[in-house]
Image 1 (cartoon, rainbow, N blue to C red):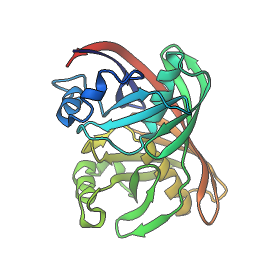
Image 2: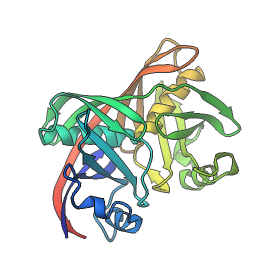
Image 3: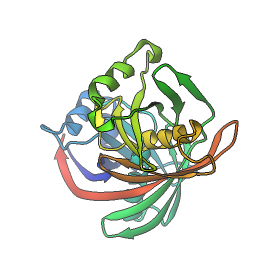
Image 4: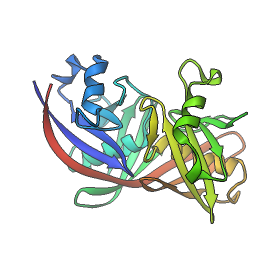
Length: 268
């Protein structure tokens, strides 16, 4: 069975996207975790941090289903959502604005500009209702759970070892958490992320970048009236804006590039 796919990335966070609006082929393999993991394998498959299906939705433009590279369905992926919007735009499924359903509920996205395969996409994220101080850092949920730890030596931080230790620690059992390490250098937030499900450091993480921007504001590491934050990941630069109040963070927008890399077919 041959399946057509599209490869996209958002700041180096890369995804395999399959148009499955007919739900004819993928439905038979989506619960086979090993097949999805094999497709995402960087040495024996296409290679990606995750695989996404675009499916029809009865009320909105489409439904986004996200699988981590381990083959299991994951929680919300911010860069994945931006790439999915870019894919839908490239394929004329949407115009400049869209409403779509993801694992954590309804999201809106807007195409700001485009130049060939590169699209600037702003993605609306759900409100953050609670931030929790913990021994290792600040914990919050931006569609996926994240611990944010501010460090003074980001480049020397062993993200894999330290992140994995926290991800599998008793405090976060049984689901675990994503772990972000951040450092503020000349008023710019630099970030590295260990992602659960990928079980490694990724070049960028949209929900992690969102969590870190909010955490920096909450901790007072950026100006309290600043609600438009630039963050630099290993794979590129993204922007987060929000409206803070004492109870929750609202109107959260994640903005950055989404790039089409190539299109192909794979035999399953």
